[in-house]
Image: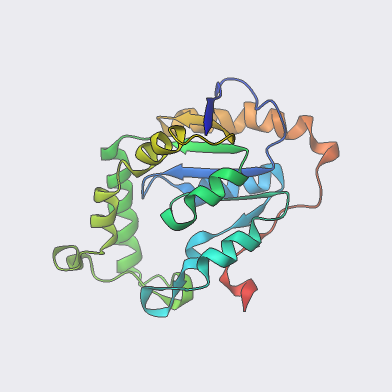
Length: 212
């Protein structure tokens, strides 16, 4: 697969129709995906909502659902489930890579997890974050997961670049949140305005609730 690195100082050379947002746990992928969905009027496919059953169990239908929901011409989603990573990369035009430092993403992940746990926030399928102390006993704790997968996006992109397939994926990379904010308010907004006349109806959010 050919990966083409785009200049974040310039607007994308086309209206992004199929977009992935990649980065470590805590980087803010879903938040960015929602902002871009509104900006480019794309359907947002929430992979976490599709993936989890009650009790944090995976849905067996997840890969099939992702395959079906990404058949349409225009969508945006997060890129972080290995079982659908290749499918999504083949179908996407643009990957927005939140390549932030490990201290930044882990601090963000810790604060997010702490707040969710303290407030007993209800997440996908009624699940809630376990007590923070579970990081000491649960091998699947989100903080442990965030640490062990901190280089997953970089490794996955390198692996895809080595694959002898004709597909191409454009990548725009950000190493700091401030650089992303400038892109959202500048080049990305300019691209959206330039193609506004050709855009279809405003995007929606697609999650597990729409499948039931």
